Length: 454
Image (cartoon, rainbow, N blue to C red; front, side, top):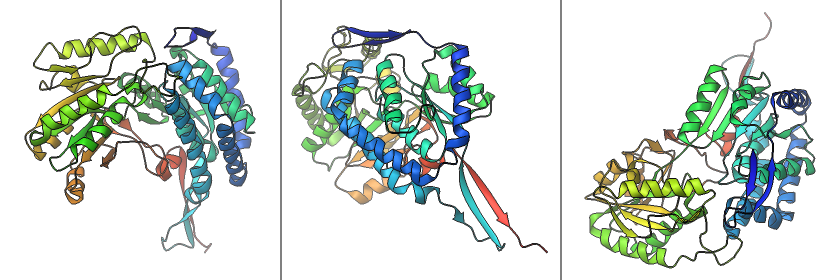
């Protein structure tokens, strides 16, 4: 069952029965038929439709933002920013798709040789609830521009978002079968991946889900991209502006109520400034305003589901059984609420260091020097993002080479943006979204060589 429930009020908006195997087969057949037309639609026409999609997003920004806030609890100002970011991505790819997908001439000494980027077919996107519009746009826009068709299996707790997304793409003129919403249960995911129309699969989600889907993609020899969890390191060097850095640290941990794969989670601070940073971080956490997600004044609100808050509480309690200390906040959830919390972490085998904490819990760790800071940052099974905070930019560039992460940001919180490739290493997954790398992930990179006939 797919249920739309307000996590703040627990009001149930709607429930939907998932489609069965026969309905899935019909949708897949429609996708196959549509692909044969869409792949040969001129790129200029596809770009035109993506621009229109951007306009539709902005025209209906308040409606979509309110839906996001009601269905998964994102505070309204961040929900608006999510819609604006989707429109930005549309404009970016509309501007650059032609150059990204143009034939690339290669000098081989032959009469002519070049590389073409051609569509594959259907791309199945298995998407999470935490950024219900952005995550979909991030894979769908470059995928559609290449000439592929999109099949969306969204998270079961955001069914209204998935329905509105399908309507939105249709309103922009992309046609009913270019972008289809598959309201299927997990047991039909293998059926979809096995289908000949599905030539690639992309998943944003947990490490557990990534392993399962990647195994299926391998079984059926389908190209895959996995964007999984993260336990991003936020490295504070001794020469940084501590007050400003602490403000950014608070933002980096509290964004989306702490439910972001690239939210800073482990704050690794050099011992010279450790106490100062900890005090400043506590002061910033104290200023956070709790409230209804729809209230413009709210800085944070509920988590998306009760079980998520309960799991976070379990992780914190388990972490406090050892040498770690509770510095600020609480250890018990109240329904979907979990208060922003700061832990002083010295046990590197505890959940607060080893696991991904998907909520506003900051693990603050003391490092004796820069070498240990890098070692602690890399002492993780994850490798999604990391940030370094310092006034010495040359040193930061040197240190960034030693960090095992898909992205390293200096004096900036880690974020995704259309211009830069996004993805991770180690258990954070593989493949890249966004930028030129993202639009070419789901293409047949075809080499063509021509010699004059002898």
